[in-house]
Length: 167
Image (cartoon, rainbow, N blue to C red):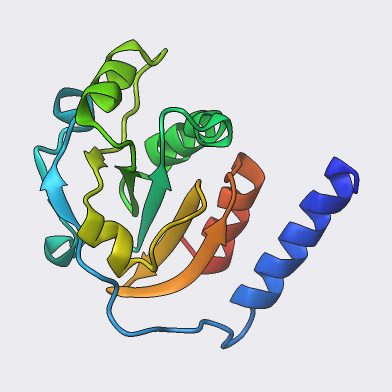
């Protein structure tokens, strides 16, 4: 399948998912809390998902430093976050086995990661379905998961989601 065809199919899926009353609200999104590893750049010291009230959309993105598609999506996630901080919070949940590798990656990553990154624990991973594939993102609105995506996100996808959500 060509790249253009896959993008068209993805946009069609998003349009169908978000059109009309297609929002499939679930019970409350599982809480995520932890110390932010890039607090000087993100401006957050600690994240507690239950206490975040002023955002129209929260994206919980499970990723790892050793995952090429995860690293590839960081630039698009970063740009989207910078342009939409008023309405969006992206939380990067890193699933590396050790914290040392994550901290090293954050220090060396070109340009930095502006959205808060925390180290996922086994409870976070299990509460979100036992993450076995990365990258994987959960889109949360009003405390409920409204959309789930497996695979890397890009500018076009994020823009379409923003437009469909009306902000």
